[in-house]
Amino acid sequence: MATGGTAGRGWRGPLRLVLTVVPPLVGVVLIGQAVVDSIGGDIRRWQFALGAVCLCLTVAGRLVPEE
Image (tube, rainbow, N blue to C red; front, side, top):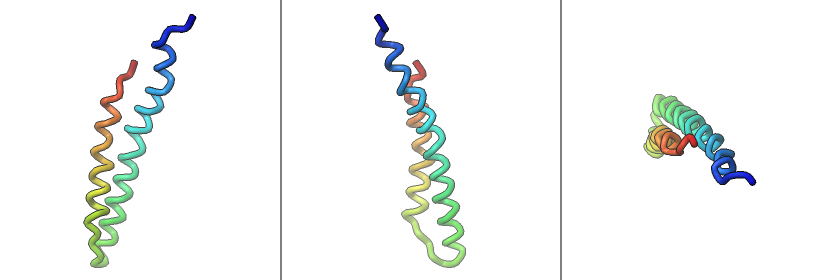
């Protein structure tokens, strides 16, 4: 019989990887695009805010247990 611990390990690893890699990339792209747009005079505060939130989501990936 398989134990419950081995079944739970399958989804935690990829979830942790996705939460630690994808939001920072999206955040950097959003902030970069907002900076480029702001040079032209079109300041979009929501892009800066959304990019900052995406960067902060990296912490959520560290909260997922490794086991």
